[in-house]
Length: 448
Image 1 (tube, rainbow, N blue to C red):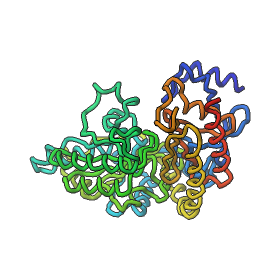
Image 2: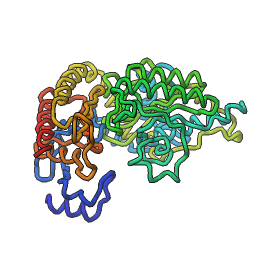
Image 3: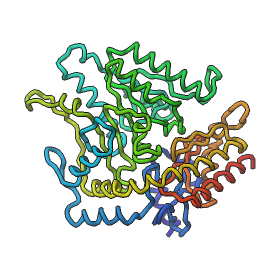
Image 4: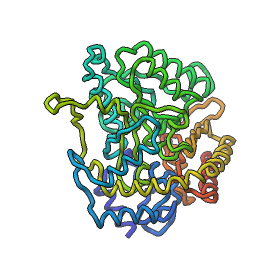
């Protein structure tokens, strides 16, 4: 069975973010089942899910409460359109989200995934300024974005992104943004350490926002950490100062918490840790506990009221998705919100042990940097620790380490030569040790 599935896979499937010329050689999993925090391959081998199935599986697989919620909703209905219509599961979910969201957010616009959540925020921000009735506001058509940002793969979200490897080829399709530097350069041109480099980059971002104040529709940021960039953490006060700069410029503020929302930071929302309320909060991934695709863009009453008017005035937000407010996904999200409070109580101890094991990686050969944000970690591998000289891209060292981890029954996925560790929030102390033991051993194998 295993071989036939892999044959069908190679013959019929085009995988995302996958160089197919080497795909088969890197021994991909063929998942047929899962239990708790473990994936089960077609041959029955179990692998610890060290990336929470791409950062979305909050509580493990086959969680009884979520399984039950979806099954019960199936007994009522699976989906009904949300366009000019409503369905109870998503309506009550919106109300619950407002109870836990940063104060000031009052409206929920549902979509399908992280990219669409960001697209919604971007389009709302743009349209809001076009219909205030103030000619000066109509000039607010540009977005301030951050270098190395990743906000998704739709064309609008790619325009807001800043990763040349992913986005460079699409340049002719994209609109231009005001690009501020990333909060950390891998090899700082000024020779600064990470925290000092982050502050210097923040000051440049503040200056850019002030310089272009009259033309900025919104400032867009991933709070706390730039995930796809290789877990680039931000210096103390970064989010607050960026938000203040946007406010001083009269611009809106979009917080993309698709990757870090719902506990990943150690708080329900990373904005909450910084004491910041954005004008738009983009959420997805963990919203349904990793079960079903659903996203939501939360915004304020001020933004919502900017779209009110008679139908013939054309102020409506003409944007939507077929599966907006899907009832099955909403049921999974309700169950997720039921589970979260108990998980948040145990999360500090989990993060503490995770942090202690992460710190030990710093002493390993070929580990150039260890960057952690809550229960998210990036381990940057380098050819020479002293000079931070990278490995040749052709060596695919990050993937080699992750492939070796697979041999030790731990599933991880790299971002270039940065190994990402982002397990379910409910991972146990014993499983954290299994994960880091495998990663340490695989890193030590590099020279071999």
